Every structure is written in C-alpha cells, then in structure tokens.
Length: 68
Image (cartoon, rainbow, N blue to C red; front, side, top):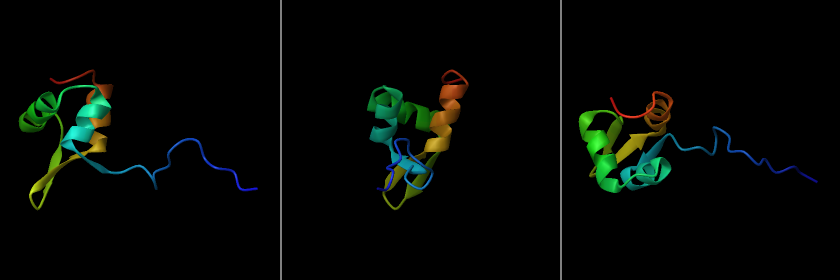
C-alpha cells in the first residue's frame, strides 16, 4: 500500500497565486491585498492581463510581521 503524504511538497505548492487567493491565505480583504501589491509589500508578476502574487513574498510578509 502506497503512503499518501499529508503535507504539501514543493511539487504541489504553487509558486504564484491570484490576488484573491493571496488575500484568502492572509485572511485579509482583496482590496487590502491589492494595496499590498501596489505598495510592493507583495511581489507580483503580470501574466497577460492577470496579476499573480509570489507565494514566497506572502511567506516573507508573514515572517516580518506585516507590511512596513
């Protein structure tokens, strides 16, 4: 029987998420997430017409205790 991992691995963890998903991850409103993107507190990437947030920047924001 194959053991199913219970924690996400780097293979299944996305590197980029949408701004609404980033807001959910941080338990904040979408408007607040967009504000963090516009101030540079969350690093974003434009892919065509969509904006994605680097999960790494979400982790850094949490580690430093919030926006500057």
